[in-house]
Length: 556
Image (cartoon, rainbow, N blue to C red; front, side, top):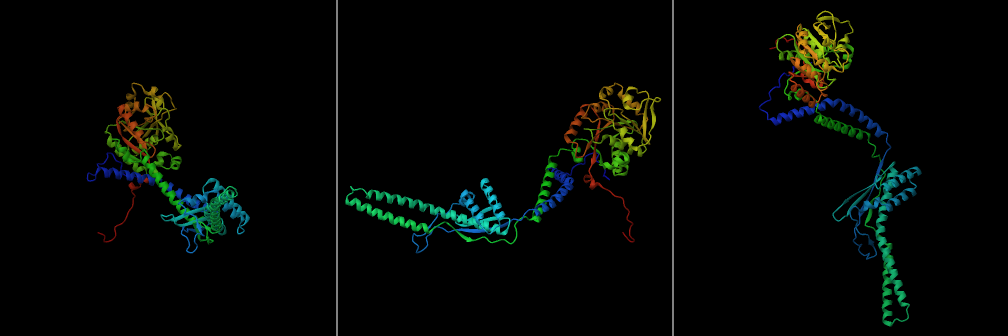
């Protein structure tokens, strides 16, 4: 059931600022759009959540182990003199680049391939993954994180992932050891270069001493230089044995007790929340960008009243019972009642008034609504004639044939004659109409006609409609859509009022504006709008039920 339809837009509350009122309308429209799509959002969430859960549960286990390294600094050890040489402290980001480089990665792959703690298949799988990551320059199996101070001193953590606890531990230790060897190799390479330089100097001194034309002073000088070079070379050889890098191992890897992935419960909850938030965001975006008619407020701002809100019927009920009987059994009784009252309040009490029912485009329910409105008017004792003026695709014959009974034909004018609006325009003196229901007569459109405008453009069209309307309280003219063809503009000049139907969630506001401009440009007497196929969520707040509650004894 629906609430009373608005005939005129109600005045706004003067106590509220205009900005707040507009914001309230926009927020309510936003919530209404989200609520209308909420069942689909919840259904999608209910499908995605278990799907992600079972998918995650089917994934292989992933274990994670880590090893820690600390920067040792460059200060010497007391009493060791210059026998211990350390590499310089690494700038931030250097170790990460070294880990991604071929020297360290190939050393890790070699260590994994040589270990006996893992099965052959696991070693081959890990080696293949590391080789692929090396070529792609994107590490996923091994990760390096750091906690450094401003002097680039601190702790590095090497984290490795593997298909088993043992594999993760072996890989973490291999990565840490490879980084330590690379760091030590930096200092060792410097000493090797110094050793080669000293050997070259020693060879040059020996060459000069081998010449015979040296005087005694030069010979003694070269002998002293050779002794000094030999002493430096010996010192460099000693330092090579004691060279150390800037990193030291703090904590080797330990086998984890449980896998870190997959986590089906966590993944399912996150996927469900993400689907819910994404669906709500898309629904809000769709509502904000939606330019279709969503309610009465969208139509009232166009300057004409909304005479009725007609609920949407289930397609199954329409197929089984027909639109008129389905409307009687469903909640359309009250909605059509309000439409009937509001329509008659817009018209005078003169008999035979003609009302054209039209829409902006096909498929918005004008023919079904015309039949339903005629049945509602007839139930109040009024005689109604329906003229199906949609000569290209008339639908009134199909609407009333749903009853599967023989219709009686009554005389509209003359004796005998034609039984369609198309033929009535050609032979207007003898016309019969179909008695669809008590007090409801129908003049069907007839077979589809392409050149319908030429038939409607006759000088005495208004006179014919007046003659056919004489015996009825109200005549409803089912017109073609205003934006589809120009037939409705011709018919509208000979009626007392025009009702424009808009379908909720389908008819765009721009199309309604365009239809109004065409109607006003042709001088059509606009009465107002009918909002058709209103969803259940849009009319929940207007529901009204019947009930009886006896007063208790002694109640005040």
